[in-house]
Length: 285
Image (tube, rainbow, N blue to C red; front, side):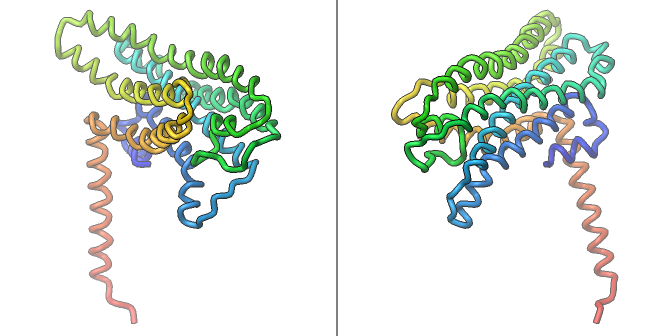
């Protein structure tokens, strides 16, 4: 929320990189809300029941938000490529209209491409138990307890899930960085290389963090204790990664630090003004 408010209020942050970072922040908020709200409710009320429709909604929105985030990261990689490799035409090519169009396409594709997964999953009509060994309704725990034929879903995940939802965004992310690295190596001054690397380091850190987590979740070898490790990596993906994303960008970014100080000074001045007015007003009987 802090990142979104900063980007909205500060004119110096009205750039394509921070526009996509706002989209990433919205995705992190929604992903955390979808996955952790039921856990928090269970802690408070003690009720651990979830309806079938709500469970399918959990699975759909979690997959859709993850796919959208991968696509947004791919577009952010293209933005960094344009900023480093074609700086003279950067603002002309990456206009607000183009950025909004790219973001809209990412959101639309992310929510459309997981519809087949959810449809296949919702047609499972036989389960060995009604207890899900997880803190939200993810695909793998549901497949573990299903006694229906899951071969079609496994095939769909192995083909569309890995190649379309995984490899295409990964290619969109890594290919621009190949050209970025080539341009950085051709730079003659260390200052230019340091500045170009500084421009891309935050985004590259988030990309590595997210893809490593997703690999450990869905592509690691299965075992008897795989669900326990799956829960740990899911918790890291749904709670730690959304927390680290804004920190990685803000701690290493001078613009975000400057905007944060301005916002804090603004709220501090407002608070002092309100406090001063309250002190001057007579007490009402």
